[in-house]
Image (cartoon, rainbow, N blue to C red):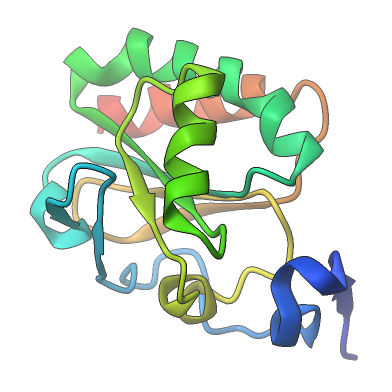
Length: 165
């Protein structure tokens, strides 16, 4: 059985309607990537090994992303001293717009810019926002596609579980 996820077609172009794939599954190694931050420095996922990492894919045009940001900021503030890192991968076509939106929304965690959608395609999550929780060994542990109110409680439970391991 094939499932399809519908996205905003104008926003993601060729990624608009894709079949779900098993490319990213729990317990598999998280695909490594290197992306620039608004200040021009690059950040590589593999450099975060040893920490629990939440990677959140978001865009300025995504209403649920805006709704989710204050919750992500709170989780970042609460758990970063416990070996937790949160990375926000912005997929706006114009990286300046993504960086400006992150500043306007008060994003506290590192924002990475994926204007070419290279990492977004690599992770192939099929919805926006999308969140991946990665353990200290670099393995995907949890996948969340889309956002619904209250899912931040699930994120928090999963983060607590992983930082205790």
